[in-house]
Image (spheres, rainbow, N blue to C red):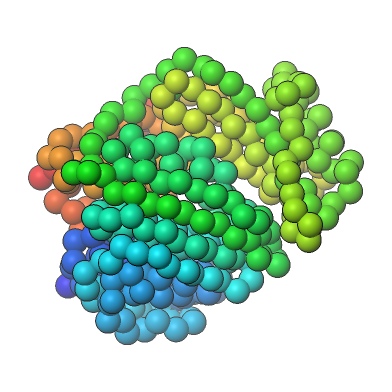
Amino acid sequence: MVELDGSQGEGGGQILRTSLALSMVTGQPMAIEKIRAGRAKPGLMRQHLACVNAAAAISGAEVDGAELGSQSLRFVPGPVRAGEYRFAISGAGSCILVLQTVLPPLLLAGAQSRVHLSGGTHNPMAPPFHFLERAFAPLVRRLGADLQLTLRRCGFYPAGGGEVEAVIEPAAGALQGFDLMTRGAHQSNYAECLAPGLPRHVPTRELDTLGGAMGWSGEQLRFGSVRQNEGPGNALLATLAYEHVTEVFTVFGEKSLSAEQVAHGLVKELRAFQKSESAVGPHLADQLALLLALAAWQGKKECAFTCSEVTEHTRTNCAVIERFLPVCFAIVESRQASTVRVSPI
């Protein structure tokens, strides 16, 4: 039984999601206490409970403590079963986080899985759909597996109602690890604004402000396609494509912020990443750590990447991974590009 303190490090929901995923991958039972103890509303919220229930569904797990507000959970997985699944979160809880919970075990399940998800697709404090599609999924393919994503409908806070379909194809053999030390040659930059239910001037001002600050214009500034009754919502995204990696940065509009303030918030993130010499930004680093740890474990080979910032979120995730897998992380921080290495033990 792997016993975890949910208040350690960053102390958020990522500890729960990573431990659920790796409990299923390794077959090790786990128990977690003090779930999200440092948060304003501690314990399992709806989206966290949805992750637990989804994990139980694909592995036939025995679970104790799966209820709203619970700060303790015991999870005993059975064999992971590939197949077709549907998972829904009422409201705008992130269905993308549910997908991230079940993805690692389904990548190793030996057969294709199709996962239908509904809930929030573009939420603050969670990776939006476009990040997963453009930045994360290509890295899954580099491992020798495949992840195909389709956005059926956007879901914004507070209404939710988004719909996503994921087709997960495991690798033919062990996951193939790789090093991602540089971005490679620059290919393209572009921004898009999703603003369903808002006046046209809002996305126009956001894009104009961003374009003026970054020197982008014309085809680089796009109004994202939306469907009827998807809003209201506001997400401003920038996609930076390079030879070896694509990064996606997102900021969300709020009633208290002007369109210009929203755009400048994104400009700040973009400039920080562009000033660094790293392959990936802080959010993709967090996701890449788990993928490369699985590959290092299966392939018995060290993997490494560089990132612009090693956040407490990433450090905590690495610590949880080490509790389940026979791997060891080594982090060397630098102003221009920090290096994260994961080695099999």
